[in-house]
Image 1 (cartoon, rainbow, N blue to C red):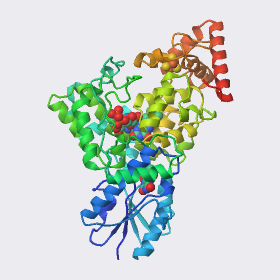
Image 2 (image 1 turned 30 degrees about the horizontal axis):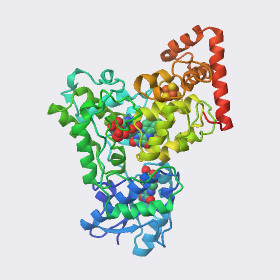
Image 3 (image 1 turned 90 degrees about the vertical axis):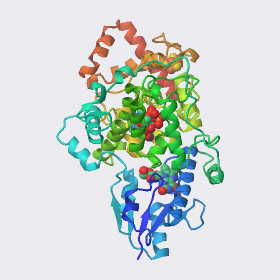
Image 4 (image 1 turned 90 degrees about the horizontal axis):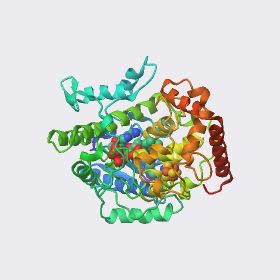
Amino acid sequence: VSRLVLVLGDQLTESLSALREADRDRDIVVMAEVMGEAAYVPHHPKKIAFLFAAMRKFAARLESQGWSVRYTRLDDPDNTQTIPGELIRRASETGAHEVLATEPGEFRLIAALEECPLPVHIFPDDRFVCSHAEFEAWAVGRKELRMEWFYRDMRRKTGLLMEGDKPAGGKWNYDHDNRKPAPGQITFDGPLHFQLDAVVIEVLDLVEARFAGNFGTLRPFWFATDRDGARAALDHFIIHALPRFGDFQDAMLDGNRFLYHAVISMYLNAGLLGWQEVCEAAEQAWKADKAPLNAVEGFIRQIIGWREYMRGVYFHEGPDYTRRNALGHDRALPEFYWTAQTDMRCVGRAVEQTRDEAYAHHIQRLMVTGNFALLAGIDPHQVHEWYLAVYADAYEWVEAPNVIGMSQFADGGVVGSKPYVSGGNYIHKMSDYCKHCRYKIGEKSGDKACPFNYLYWAFLHRHRDRFGKNPRMAQMYRTWMNLPTERRQATLDSAEAFLSKLDRGARV
Ligand code: FAD
Ligand code: DLZ
Ligand code: SF4
């Protein structure tokens, strides 16, 4: 008897564990476009179109390799619209009575598979450097989890940028060289754009018809939707942008959405690229003298360090993680996260590009939209759902630790030892947004002052019991307490006026 082999939308990898366990001569691959997955948050139309097109092409590829595939399209009349529903339907159609699956990247879907009336054998998702067991072994007994220590172990394990047991160049981390402000001119034209083909055109029409109300523009659609395209996008980055990636990793520009970023996270997370080929391509560029060590180390750290660490934290912390709210924040997510209608230029630009591209780079996510939400005391669960919906690379295993942990400090310090908050000066230093802004970066309080400036101090003041004794924040509290009382009062008054305007729904 044949068995069903489930391949999810972010499992588009030929060497997937469930496929390795299966027998292509007798087992049947099941793939399904279902509303259960396409609507648990209002995903960006580009994200849905990318996944559906990539799923259709991956199914065709498996068939060309001799697999038999039962593929459900969103509009198929028999579609039950959930993953377990499709497994049950395909089981009764084919007479299969068990399922081979690779562990999904969200607790929600793992639970759904576990509750499925068919026996589902879940194999580890081994498309990562670090297994769950290895992460647990690393985490056990540690008072604090810190990415840097984890990262060094991953360097040792993979041998990437290692000279024997020593890090290449003598240092593990070259971040010190990687914090340059935005350069005047960008020499990279941005990520590769791909022509539409018949599969993509058909999917775009479907998504346009079915998800018209979702936040985000569908066209122009330019993502790669198969492995070869994703590989070409990677190679394009390695040649044209990697050499300057490190220097300007934290920079932002009003007129440039991608700077020297790779824009490959959607491909990596869907399985079209693997961490190994990505890191090896970068290491190779350094060995061939085509990219400096600070850039290559910084890039590899994002992938075998941050990306793996975030996944480890998600599975280590468990299903309640997205409900954490250590700081007790409860303000509703402002409407401008969906409309870009705000006078804060930095926030408006980040939301506009998110709407257009289903992409924003790390510092925009962290220090603009994330920083604002944290300073304004927005409910972290609403912030989490926004990030999960709007980015083409967002799945809970990677999005939640970045949002709930790194960005909102809602996990109380699992991911980071202090909250990532800053006043407007950081944004001013790293970008050119402020010169296009109605608010004045140099003013600290009053109607014209940059809201980040007073919200920052008001945040520290509000949470002084929690953070006042944190040695890494002591300097900031001293600065605050050394301000004349009137200055402090004016700052707090400005913050209160701003937040009450926000709560009334007035334009800010
Ligand atoms: P580059 O800057 O070129 O970096 C290269 C690669 O490193 C990325 O493709 C990505 O795979 C990896 N990487 C870098 N930083 C991280 C990180 N912090 N965590 C995990 N991987 C990382 N990344 C996602 O993949 N999905 C998300 O849903 C997501 N949500 C985020 C939410 C917030 C609030 C923040 C602050 C960050 C989030 N990130 C997320 C991390 C990071 O912003 C994106 O991975 C990155 O912007 C993707 O663009 P890129 O490919 O151009 O990355
Ligand atoms: C994100 C997504 C979307 C939009 N649609 C589908 C789908 O129709 N079918 C599917 O198998 N997967 C989809 N996905 C990806 C899943 O949501 C993802 O596998 C889980 O969230 C686990 O990471
Ligand atoms: Fe953003 Fe403040 Fe600069 Fe305006 S002045 S762009 S709100 S940091």
